[in-house]
Length: 405
Image (cartoon, rainbow, N blue to C red):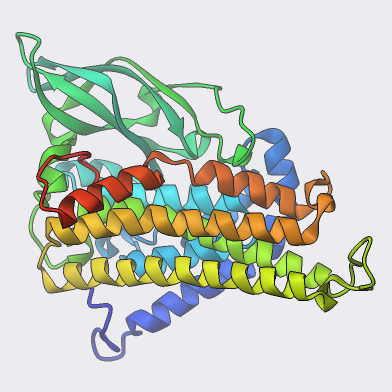
């Protein structure tokens, strides 16, 4: 899908119109998300009403093929939708984003696997954990997989999972690092997600015991990192998107939404809340407050500028059929972590502005702060790793730090 086109075919809505409609539906969900956020946090899982609303708004189908009834949009649309949802609730935005992008990931597998997932159920919800904390032992026509995978966001509502495993040959030697597709019914979920933030994501641990995975449900991560996907070639440019940048940049959308929500609360309250122990009847009258709000706003804008510039780069490369080279991928890896840190810095400044009441249980800011700080610690957003990857690339050092670039 060409993100610069205004009309895909005669009479068809433009990419921009489709995106605007989907973002509009996400915005319309905010009152529901805000109203259910405390319940989701208390129960440590998104309420069914919220998950159903995400499905009805097309969030889970954002990146699934049109041939299976999906929207087949692009990374820009996913990011804008998850940002809009994040202004309502961080956990909801995160689960929606994870399922949407892991559905995309499932479409990189051979067509036989895609048919098993989406042909049987166009509303399939794939979640996953890329870390190779499982092992696949070679057996006839596939692999016998065992493992434990932590932090599987949206686990209670998943129908399939894509999980990381080290594949071993008949002699026990590791021959590949892969993602394997497993039906949710073959996995056990252990309740391990007891955290300070993002509680409603229910990012629990998946367990596999002697699960058979056929060859067509295996995706080599080193090959995928270099743009080699085993899917059949067809005119679906979304699935030419570059592997690492696609799976990293998507993580920033919910954080951008959380930053915007924090700004809204702080600005709204500053118009009425006094600045204690000063002559100012309103925080908004203080030059110090004005400067801090401006600084936070610029940090959030910086995060958005870095994020969307990188997002558009990924979409343009997919539309042109030219994979991003390593230097571009390294820069994007650094941008993702850099943007996440700017959101955290902005939220911290806004809490300073709002004062001690930011941490009241009944207040929204404390949940935003907790959710953002947990989300930004995702392994794909660790700023030091991104900076190391990018710095090595700039200096011509060929040492590979991560496959997720």
